[in-house]
Image (cartoon, rainbow over all chains, first blue to last red; front, side, top):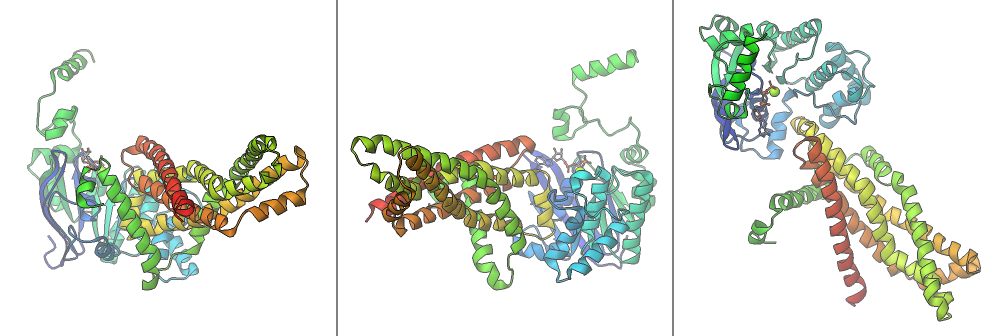
Length: 284
Length: 260
Ligand SMILES: Nc1ncnc2c1ncn2[C@@H]1O[C@H](COP(=O)(O)OP(=O)(O)OP(=O)(O)O)[C@@H](O)[C@H]1O
Ligand SMILES: [Mg+2]
């Protein structure tokens, strides 16, 4: 771990319940300046929810989140806005404003928060679009571009104010292998070259191992494993091994029924589903 | 409303959200400009076109038919008394005080209020509102303020426009069915109304504008549950705005014309 960098994010004993289901259950970790933390975990295990708590758009049931040394969970809207100017966020869905063009979406934070002239902003928009490989797409509406392109525009928008901290939720999902490599290279350039800190949620193991300086794996509401990419790769934990090698059989339960999903336990499949599975095995 | 009545209100969270929206709207309009956070003009004009100008044809059609109907109704009753000369008075005063503001508010609720609720609701469910907040852009400042100002300007403007068209409708009946001469109609109409009739109508439509746009924005910003939620919020906002507007109309009519 990066011992000399200052701590940018401190998550302490974070608990979040939806109803009586604890999606995040006592999660603690720190992120230091200059690190690239990759958060992994099965679909629906709470990665996006964790990010939402780290950016202050959801309030935890209990626990603390500190950004840049300041506790944000109890902050008023006015105070948290100042903190938010220092980081960028790429949403899993892109979350582009549908009524604005691609260029206007990227220009939005610049128009709202800087005194730059129209020409300067146009220049920055061009440059950010070029960084994500979308030169010349300024004038299209989000409805007119593909899912992967939306992701990249979202990334360009998150980077518009040159933040010192970037959160990105599955930046490479929906991208082809070449574009994935381009986005990973971009993240690496920004973290290595511009000393940005990044927190990246990813399912994509190739990409995760390419960019991570540290990794966390979430499962049933808590942290299953954390460490450097090498530590994770060589982890003795069978859940981690199953996840990074993408094997269908292993200790991670298939969340096939609502009930299992609810308490995140390794519950046996319900009889009906069990019968169906056997049926398939007998008659392939 | 004190805390206890609030606690017993079945719509409590919604009422709380609504009051909060109004407070932050007042902040962004009255206080923020003095701290150097001015609102931008361009989005206000865009919303004025969207909320107001595009509703004009519909307003014109309705107002014209109301003017025609009012004149025919008046003719029917007044002719038996031999008092057709009062038809313009009746058309004019009914339009200015009551029918104008209310009918045009109904049209704007159905056309623009629902559109605003649906638009903001869609933005809410597609995480756009959350994205704005994370970019440190206040959704009330960025989305609600321009719509509010546009509505506050355009609804009274549409009302004046509708009044003219309605009076034109009345004129059409008087001129072509009852053989009034045009100058006579215009003179009578102008004589009958005093400026207070106009002002009271304008005050009403400004109050309606406030009600319509805050209810629509509140419904949109608090949507939960995907496309279905957007649909429900849109319908809900139309019903609530209609009810609130009609109740407020009765209250204002009471205050303006029966309190003195
Ligand atoms: N607003 C909410 N209300 C109720 N439950 C929620 C809400 N948001 C998320 N959840 C629940 O929290 C769990 C985690 O959701 P989350 O979106 O964080 O998953 P994820 O790890 O990002 O999954 P994916 O990889 O598919 O994006 C899900 O089971 C979901 O049902
Ligand atoms: Mg997610």
